[in-house]
Length: 154
Length: 128
Image (cartoon, rainbow over the protein chains, first blue to last red):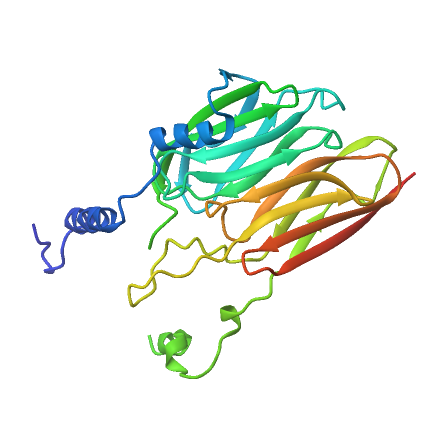
């Protein structure tokens, strides 16, 4: 459908855009992380230890318009004393080119096992958190983030 | 628009634009005073492109990875927290976290670049 002035209509223009976007996606190397590769990464860290859901509060948007800058905050439930504290919290991206997002190592000097950063997400995917306590217990949590514009490649 | 071509860096061959080699500038925001034992939030930001190693240049060549891989904070020489950053950390990385202020002293913040460069910032705090 052409408009009277001979320009393509908004609908046609959008269709062209989406075809272009698909082409770009297909052109990317298909080596993205997957839920399975994340499981492998976690296994590398903690072997066959039992991992329980809970204790981690994730602060991530349900919908991220710009995958280049997604605010991410977290807090792990813990008294943070010399004998009972959070040793490490690891973050993984199920649909990014690299599975690792970031890892945080805390000490009993940290009053809270909490922090906030800004991350890149290539596409709609789950962000997975794994927290290691000082007594060896391991907890996990995940949240899906819908990404409108991907934050990698280009 | 005539002015547009002047904004294109390639219009000036041989001139190196400042944007090509920015020196990372750390910024730290936290209170200057606190009560003994108080928990305060610290917000940090450093200007850095965090080149992921995934992008391609105009010629289709992969642009080499160059990111800040580690951020750490200590108080009077004692380690409080360390963050290992991957390529999924956004450009101009922002990091906020919490610290306890046991006494007057100095917080030291360190950013470690892939290329071995170390960027530092310090912030004094007074317990009143």
